[in-house]
Image (tube, rainbow, N blue to C red):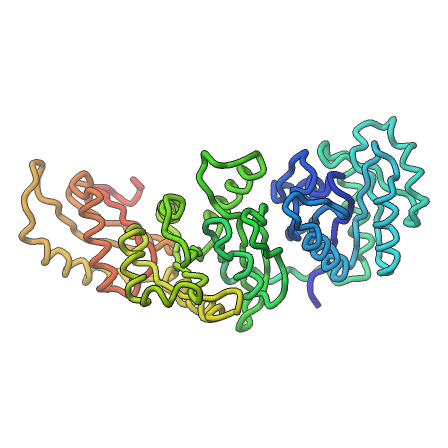
Amino acid sequence: MGLPTVAIIGRPNVGKSSLLNALAGQMISIVEATAGVTRDRVSTLIQVNDRYFELVDTGGYGIVDNDELSRHITGQIHQAIQTADLVLFMVDIRDGRVPLDEEIARLLRKHNLNVIGVANKADSAKLFHTAGEFTELGFGEFLCISAVNNLNKTVLMETILEKLDLLDSSTAPQKPAMKIAIVGKRNAGKSTLVNAMAGSERVIVSEIPGTTRDAVDVRLEKDGQTLLIIDTAGVRKKNKLADDIEFYSYVRSTKSISRADIILFLIDATVPISQVDKRLARFIVDESKTCILVINKWDLAKDSAATSDYEDYLTRELTSLRSAPLAFTTASEGKNVQSVLDLCAELHKQANTQISTGELNRAFEIVKEERTGAARRKTGFPKLYYATQIAVNPITILMFVNDPRLFDEAHKRYIVGRLRTLLPISEVPIRLLARSHRSRPSDR
């Protein structure tokens, strides 16, 4: 049996995302005064002592979306309702009962769901008595809360756990074997790729750029392991971020890179590499993240260029990721999608390789012999005495040398390049640290 699922349902701008963030204790969903910010189902794992459940935020029911995505948003809400074990039916106590609340109530009764009524924005006890009008919706008394001020948050959590008592929520979910973030420019096909991997319409897909706003976590099972796929908002130039929503989406995308094990950098094969792509590549490198360059929409571009030609083109344009492997996909048709997941597993294993000190130093001996004829610098010759691996993912190697200042970035790049050919770590980031051989371990 899977985790119990609790879905937050309500009309636009009643505070659903604020409630998810409050119960999770961290910023997960984007919160904005603008109605309709949330479009996809945004979920997070909630743990209270030895109890677990999945909490799902949804878009506003009945939203009139500016990008004409209302039908898609409503579809995501219906999927959340169909998979929920418990629904938090949220209303705005300041607005009172409105026709859209009544429409949602009819929908929930139709599905015969277990429902907790939640009257949000009750920032003052003076408002509590007005919650009585919501009992006419057919779900008993509504609990007055303030998601922003955490008012009655503990009471709500206790009520949720009581409702879930008949369900098994004591088994800790399996930790993801890999966290895979899908990043790229807007409209590159990220959400389409996520749905192809999940085998269902887990996130909204549209040709309208900027459809995805939140970072959406999707758990799936493959070969007996749990994978966490993170769909992110499309990145665009900072000076073209239209509003706060796009800014928060950009922040979520960069944070998703930081928390992922593997990055699928989606490239739209039908358009040239841009400055946005180059900036994103640099960020991935700076974060020392294992990356796969996924060339999407290849069916639309392959007639104009051979695969080898496109590989050469990417090497020239994205030099900082020249060691990253390439995968060519057509996500809309599911082509090569499972191969990409298999490649993720291979790279994850490579990034977690533990190299013995003996094997590592034999490789360094070869590098030292090749550099014997290197020109003397003003401050002396760079000498390496021995090295040891101190971390994985990214693989981090500590070199004990005569003078760390002699090992500049160019020299380190040369060493990394040779290690890629001498050791089984050719496609993952390698971090080199230099320390004087006179330093003792306690000096670290």
